[in-house]
Image (cartoon, rainbow, N blue to C red; front, side, top):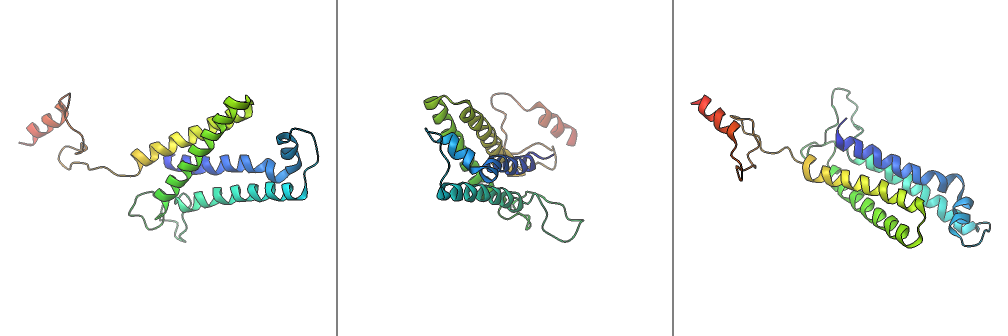
Length: 176
């Protein structure tokens, strides 16, 4: 499985995991967050469920906009993540926005964990931090095809510093 697709589906699953308790039992969330045990108000229940549904919606949009699910009616066309692909024109912007989302969520979870010491904040920080690192890897390395030489098959953007590329030199000698 491609790392890009892993990130897309992982983000959707992480958001669904966070949304499930907000939708299923918002009174439990209010009781956990409140210093005194009390029943949640109607407004708190509404906001909890609205946030849960918003997280589910963003997760589904992430999967659709990154091109992980092909939106064409032909089965022969596979989903790709290249910049020239008309099926996924929003793949890189969606990846960047969700990476910032995971970075902010991971930082917030870490800050709350160090301040309060509740282990669930640490789990949230680890999950969001992991997805942020995968997103950064995709942004840095999986978003371009590189410039591959036709003669040697090596990437043209690399240099020989501090070590020489002996493989490329041997290919040049063979071609002569």
